[in-house]
Image (cartoon, rainbow, N blue to C red):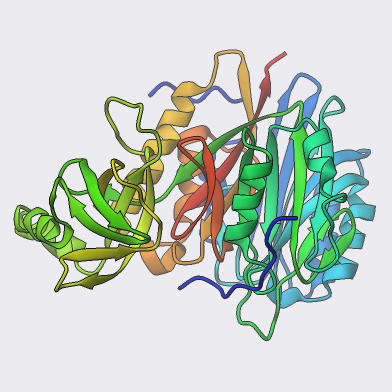
Amino acid sequence: MPDADPAPTRDAAPEPRTEADGDPMDLMEDEAPLAASASATAGAARTRAALRGGDTWEEAAEAIIDELGGQGPVDLAIVFADSLFGHHGPLSRRLQEGLQARHIIGCTGQSVIGSGVEAEDGAALSVLTLEMPEAEFTPIAVIPGVTTEDDLAGLQSAGADTWLIFSDPFSINTDNLVRGLQGRLSDIVLLGGMASAHNRDVGTALFLDGRAYEEGAVLLGVKGLRVRPIVAQGAEPLGRPLTITACDRNLVQAIGSRPALEVLKEVLGELDDATRERVGYNLLVGLAMDEYQEEHGRGDFLIRNIVGVDREAGAIAISAVPRVGQTFQFQFRDADAADDDLRAHLADARAAIDEGEVVLGSVLCACNGRGQGLFGTPHHDAAAVAEALGPIPTAGLFCNGEIGPVGGSNYLHGFTASIALLTAPKE
C-alpha cells in the first residue's frame, strides 16, 4: 500500500456557460455570512449546496437537511464540518440518513466554505449534493496498519479518472500517499486536501459513507461526471525561465552553469523597488513539470519553498528534488500575486468550458494560510469562484495542505486553492 508513515503538519472572457440559479451578489451578503445556498441542473443531473452555521452540530445538520433533504435520494453528498462541532460519527450518519445519500465524502476543517462565502468567524457546516444516476462512485478508506494491497485493488478496477481525496495530517504521510497513488494510477487526477482543525486537541475527522475516521485518508473514485481541475498556487514569476545545470538531492547548485545563489542575487538586483518590497521574505522557486513545452507560463511550474542556502558553495536548498536540465524560475507569493493567479486560472477554466457544457458546482480546498489572514477581506476565494463562474453550488474548507495536479502529475501543495469543477452536458 502507499506509504503511511506519520507526518507532521505543514507550516502554517465570455460569460460563464452555467445554468446555476441566482445572482452572484446574493451569495456574498455580509449581514448573513453563515448562510448560503445555490443549485444547478444539466439534463437529469442536479446539484444543490448549502452552508449553515449553528451553535451545535445538530442545529447545523438539521438546517442543512431542511434545505437539501426531502426531495428524494441523492447519489453523493460532499460534506465539510467545522472541527469545533465534534461528534463526527453521529454527524456523518445523520447527514447520510437525512439526505438519503448513496455516498458521502468529506472532512473537518478549521473553517468551511460555501457558495460565495467563507465561514471564518463562526462554526458552520457546508454540503454539496449531486443527483446523477449515471455517475459511478468507488469509496475507499486508507487506514495505516489496516489497509492492505488487496484492499487497494479497487483503485485500479474502478475505472475512475478522478479521485476526491481527504487525509488526516497527523497519522499518515500525505505526500507519500499521493506519490504512491500517482505511481499506481498514473493517468488519474487527485483533488482534495488535508483535514484541518482549530488546534490539535480538537482533532480532525474524515467522512466516508456514514462513518467518521480519525486517521488515514478517504478517497472516492468518480466516473461518468466530468471534473475539471483548477490548481492556483498563488505565485508570480520573477525574471525568466532558466536551466538547472548542477544539483544534488534538494540542493540547486548551478543555474545556467553559474552558482545558483549568484543567479538569485542577480534576479533580485534587477527588480524595481516596488517589486523588491513585495518579494520580501516570500521568495519561492518553480520547477517546470513538462520539459517538452517550448514556452512555460502560469500553471506550468510546481511551486516549492526555498529552505536554506549554502553561501560557501553558492547553492540553494529547496523543498523538492530537482534534476539536471529541468527548467527553473524564481517566484514569489503575496496577496496580490495569489489573487491574480486564482483569477487567471478561473478565467482559463471558464474559457475552456464547452458551449454545451454546464457547470454543476465546485469543491474548493483552500489553504488555511489564505483567507482573511492573507487577503485582508472575507470570502476572497469563494467570491472569486462566484464572480468567474456564476453562483454555482460550492462546498469546501480551509485545508492543512492541498492536493491537485500540475503538469499531468499530482502533488501536495501549500498556500494553494485546489478546485474540483464539476460539469456535465447541458442536455
